[in-house]
Length: 235
Image (cartoon, rainbow, N blue to C red; front, top):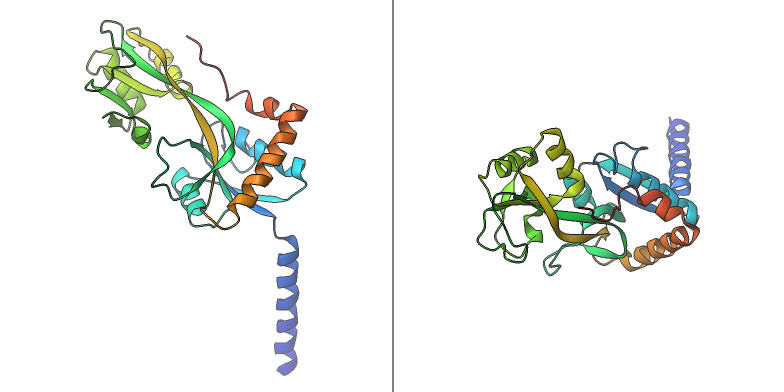
């Protein structure tokens, strides 16, 4: 009996040593989204994490999970960094930190009805909608939308004054539904950041990311990976 207990204890100790020896240097979380991170091994941001690991010589263990869980895991310190997040307007109440590096940009476009002029600099008081998760990115009252297609169809019919959201998500809806009454103009080009836990080793993680991304930029590999999703605004 004692020999059996001893055998299990030894095996347990060896297993612990093996796990410790193979533990990754960093843990990352990527929000699951089409194109950006479709699965554990497919997506632009998955390719970026792999490239950061290769450029730095450090091992990175990553997960691809729903956005809310990914943010929760970085805020609680379960992972060392999360991507992506549009840089918030106000960080005063944020329970996380931002990377020094900007990894790409998002074009937020103001969509309006051709029959009704709307000044992009005077949107306060207008009936404008945006995706419900992005209401905080605007300095004026804006209505949340849980259905992009529905909002754009309302705009096409003149039932709302405007709709603001990323062109990559909105333009295909307009094209697919032949929404001929909708016109567009750039509202703002937002920076997209990597998110870090507050405190702890976040400063060291930020330095690690900056150094690895600089290597990728210098080699041209960063542009090769990120250019497909970092497109300049075009009318």
